Image (cartoon, rainbow, N blue to C red; front, side, top):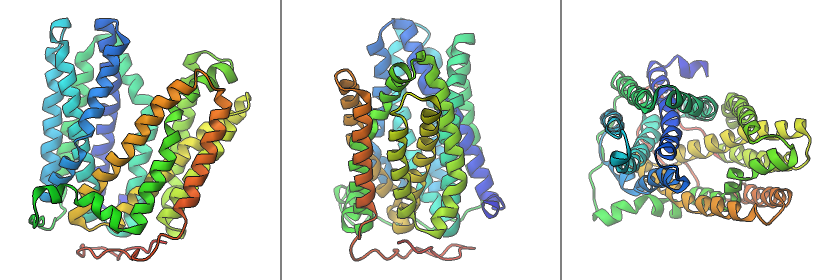
Length: 410
């Protein structure tokens, strides 16, 4: 981590992106609450998150854009566009302008997927291969750790002074992120010219995954795990109410513990990955998630707290291992599309499992669901560490100044 933080570009980028995460987390929850206040409708509030999710489905297109232009100017433009877009919400002051929130959140989701794809690709160009794990760890620690504080910040600002400060906060963090990217000194190679029809270019990411055994195995692993992982959106409510017999607000304590676990996980992710491999780290994270499910079963507070901490740690290990594996096994001119294709392919089972968990929790004991989750997640870990087949050598990428070479992956 010291070597990463000694890198000027890494400090600028990670600092700006961390601030942007604060604004993102504050805004999306505040918008749902705001719509609920204006309309009194749970459905109208839920449509805010649906609009955001629908925007993310444009990831194949945004991934293609991220592979066809230089990522640094693209990230500057995307962050400034996002800052301008959220300012449109300042015009939504009552029922008559409520409709503005939905297209803004759709565009917010689309720009978010563009920024994510471009970020994944830029980091692989900007940093030596042996620092990618640390960079991904920092971003995951920020995302998970700040998730506990920043939604409360957004809700608190909304309750105290209305939506204006929440919108301005998010727009300001996007502007800071754009300034941080503008300050980078990274030299990017010229983007590759499109050699085939646009439809072939659009699907190049998923085809590359299908033709690369280790990435194909990663995708299938994610689909298997996410078939039950969405249950975590509803099961903790049952753990809090039925198991611990606490008020729903106590879930905030459990979320805070999970955020603490994420910080610990981020600190150890890169060292473990260097001693093992990206796949091994992700598999350990999956096993940790399964263990956390079992710890949530007994109605005993110390066990539940340990389970939530382990869950936060494990999610970071899964994400860091998977993202670093993608960066190290994908040519730089395909990184945006590969990242976008994986995100879209995994969002479908996750959405299904969220809906299924919400339905099952009403008719099935939550402890049984936790056992099912543990079994399925362990099976996904076993599949991930299986033999990925031939052709798993790292792909060649252009040399970067200061790079020490590409770390071997199991």
